Length: 341
Image (cartoon, rainbow, N blue to C red; front, side, top):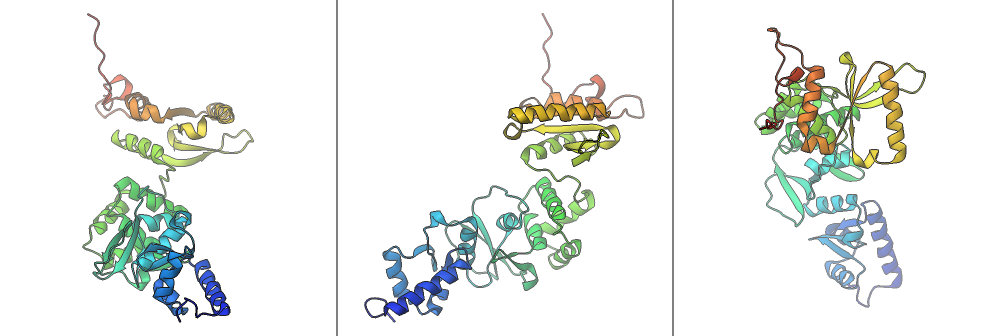
């Protein structure tokens, strides 16, 4: 029934209530097909958009509020609805929805089954002929790929370290099921992701390096460039002084070496400064060596940190010589000092 002049006030009130309830369960967005199923035709939808009662988000997708007021989940839901039946949030967007990590990728990623050529502005559409019902979950009312499928898809988009971090986080959250990962490998053996994940499973102890940010990732990359054993991330130390255990960013427990990556955002306050000093005192009294580094040092003067780590951690070779950079040997990347004339 056209809205212009012929709908009763009661019918209009019913439509408004039905739209509100629909929007409430879908983060304030809905598809044109859903609206039409309520009895509101396409012409009536256009009229409501013209008068500001509805807002077009994508082709065939509308909201009760402007795009600028939609939550992140609302934008996710709108993208999934726009891509049609069977579409699911995926890849980096799904990783963020699952709580694995925010990779800073701004386009919303959606996977659709089959080989559809449908596109939408602001949406990165992936197509899959292997997506099945077993790969789909509903998180916060949004259809999305499961954690195992999300991890599998990420393997083709992330660096090796980023992929390690995603697996570590899934393990911490108790959402990682290696049987389901193996199922993905068996069902998608020729995808590049399969090779990347098999390498990860061979070389990485899942859950051992759960870094919190890019700063910590950069420090781990530095230790690996020196061929040092991976430190234990987020390690708890009990100094044995009757006070609470201390969590350090990285530790080599056997050598009793702890490393703190001091970001300016969390360590610039007076309280943080005082707390850090007391933590160091407790660790030193318990026989630990504490190394503090900053993002500026790691970025601009990494040779300083390399030299310190190698002196403390690099063992001597069987011939009696130290590894490169250890105990006074040349440190890779360190600027050469000019001799006085």
